[in-house]
Image (cartoon, rainbow, N blue to C red):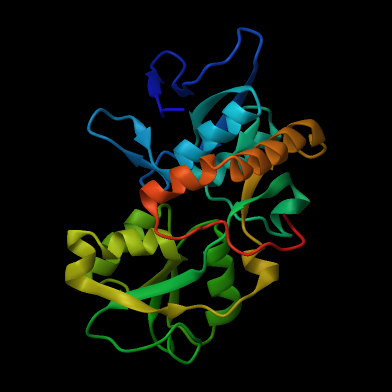
Length: 265
């Protein structure tokens, strides 16, 4: 199924194209309208593209859902879901115990390590000892912010929060922070950019913490919406089995980002 995104100006939403029947259930899928390559990026025409956009479309196609990408600021996604402004969240949101107090999740659809990057001329690793006295940037309301506060408070000089990961990256380039923590794939994309290649390198991967980082990324749904969660779970299983997941993934990665199977799948 070829990705096709069209901006619906009047409704301020983006329709995910596909062969849906007129009676297909419409599902508003919330996402934060910020660049997060290779998961979400805007092309020259302003359309959203990327691995996660294509995976959302594939899941919705397999589940026979008429999905509409609906832009919501990151820290407003869960409130929007709880107040019925959207029906699901598919925006690299990690499944965590804290979030499960407010919303439910499907099983994971990917899981990648968490990394720290920093200036090439600074030698340290992604540990409390390595970050001692340094300013670490994280995106607000993310598992990375929660992890940094739990594990690096007291060793890092400051844990600085940003509305978007791109803002943290730009402050890193400008020398206003000493490092930033985020998903390893997103940070790898930045390191491959012209700015990233010039300034920074990988300092390492943080130690595992299942309680904070969770078992992977899943689709957020309202509490008790087992029907939608079930459809998404079945669709994830289908696109994994029929090769669609692998077909999309190969466009962006040279490995399977689904991760190892766990009891949470």
